[in-house]
Image (cartoon, rainbow, N blue to C red):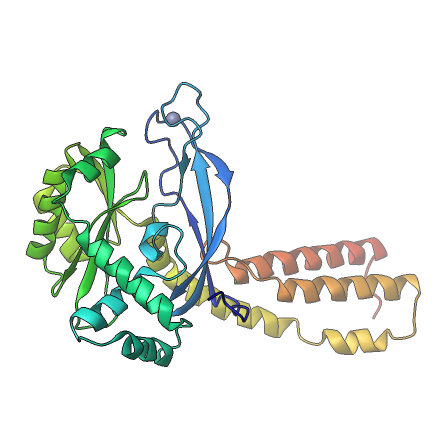
Length: 332
Ligand SMILES: [Zn+2]
């Protein structure tokens, strides 16, 4: 049944770009190809993904005009799916570990605020079963995916909807975006992950050029143990987010302090009411500039809101100083 009501606005937006700036085939710089967005229903609410898709513009390259989507996109949802992998992981666990029926699972998802209809629950259950059926017992499928590129870059993600329960481990190939292997494990210890990676490695049949993960210690250890010498890239957005946390906090405080310093625009505007001389017009312009600076948010972590506000206010202040300079010494 098609949806009868419009979906509410996404609560979070995430900008994702490809981690690699260079073409995986020829090594030349990748160019921006397009910027699609998609909305994913996750256990934490609606998530809007803005994606920077890149492609190679070298006509002699085997990946000429082949789109490379952000490596992290697959962590959130399967291609073309509206429900997140975390929702699929939860549905699978409720069914197989807790033996709940579809109506019961639907009730549980509704309790957690996931907008879903019972039929979609049944679909997600099918997706979960399909994922786990993607075992290495079908090497032909894996080889078909990997043979063309001649090498693979693996992304490994663990989805754990609830602490203390099973983790759905998903290994993807990032150049083509396909899921290679998925397994539900009770633990996330190094040895279990190492076993999974060994299985994947044996089935892939081409060299593994790199691994991407969120850098959890057990993953790092497992990769180091099973794929010695293979570069392991910790997801740049995780990395950046962690590194930016103290900066973000400091910036937030700075912004609050700055805002306090420019209070009182409204009284000035009120005083100007009814005047349309040059001075009043100019003053109104300054008030508008300050007001718009206050509402112009940055895009953390790379464009901090507080710093942006500081820049804009500094420009206003410099302009005021210039005006004061032209007027000569201030009359008091
Ligand atoms: Zn290329």
